[in-house]
Length: 123
Length: 155
Image (cartoon, rainbow over all chains, first blue to last red; front, side):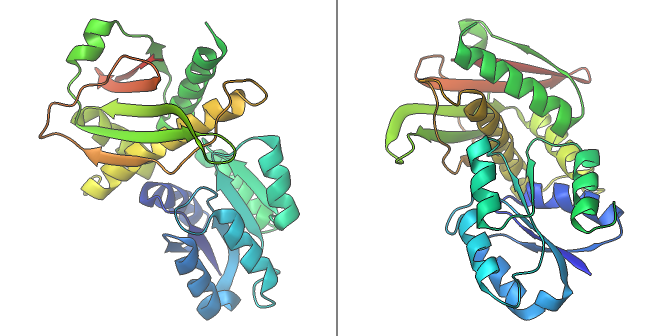
């Protein structure tokens, strides 16, 4: 199974991928919401977790999340919002839209590992 | 220390420990130091109101080349080939984004609260690009010297 990272920042994607790969999961990277949704259309059965940035050009992470939850092929895939938006009202908004977990930047690799394993039901 | 300054100080400290893996010396530089700092990479973010109208304020980060490469290497786990130019520009963007997000959260409920926009970064090595020390800019300068980070800010 694979983890889909949707983030406009290549450095953020690489940082997350580094930790996720050490946990033994393959990674697919998408640099915006549209690209991420296209990956999901083609490979939804292989995606165990979606890690989604909030603040992106074009579709925001929240808009991507709404689309993911609308689609019967993707609506059960766990979604973790990974974002600098650490205010409580943002977290509530994300959870209401269907996010399963919420991780705020900055985070340590250990924080990220724990959250990913929790999301995947192995911790 | 006012609320904005305190939020900035705390956010920078947290970002450096968690993203760069090291405590940084965080301080306010003198105007003379700001005026002579030679920038290689910088990123800019407009700060807006909830309805996306401009607040008239913005935040910028400035780094020299050595500091950028060291910082981005730490973000992406020291790949054998080192960071690419795209990584450097993107890493500076990410640094600003995370610092600004931390400041925003800490200012929630105050009259200084703002909303983020997508930051823009560039390599300006071929120009003389110095941080401006005048409000309404919030400036952050990151240097890496003798194995330690020195982060200066002015608001």
